[in-house]
Length: 157
Ligand SMILES: [Zn+2]
Image 1 (cartoon, helix red, strand yellow):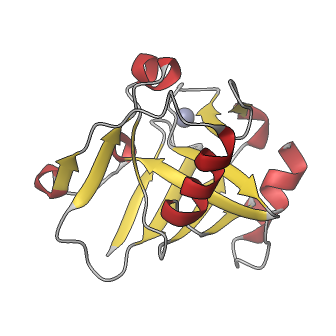
Image 2 (image 1 turned 45 degrees about the horizontal axis):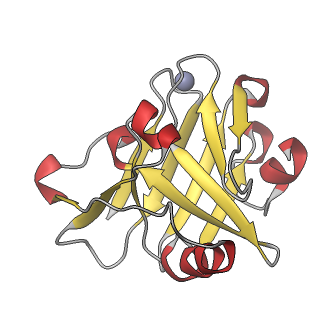
């Protein structure tokens, strides 16, 4: 199943290839202060592949807090937060916000509240490498052929 989503104004968009087709999609409402304020509800699958396109990189804020190991892509024009990434051992992992999906039936979403406030950093990074999307690339406007690796993250990070 190819899931498309993005921010409200179209500056940040993504395609998540979810294989095999999901019978349900875990929707994890995170209870951290940032996600509470933004309505962040996240999903991922380790075998998924995610392609993120950004029209105007100058209008994307890479926000980090707490341990500083996760970066929230916030659209500076419309304020929506479609994607969070985390880099471990040179590899980029991500989760996407189910509230930013364009065309996924809500009936597929299975609410799954989570709390990570008490987790130590080692456990947190290990969990991300297990559960987060493990194939993540940013595609630049001039690079839609998909050859780029992590250029988007490297440029802004
Ligand atoms: Zn936007």
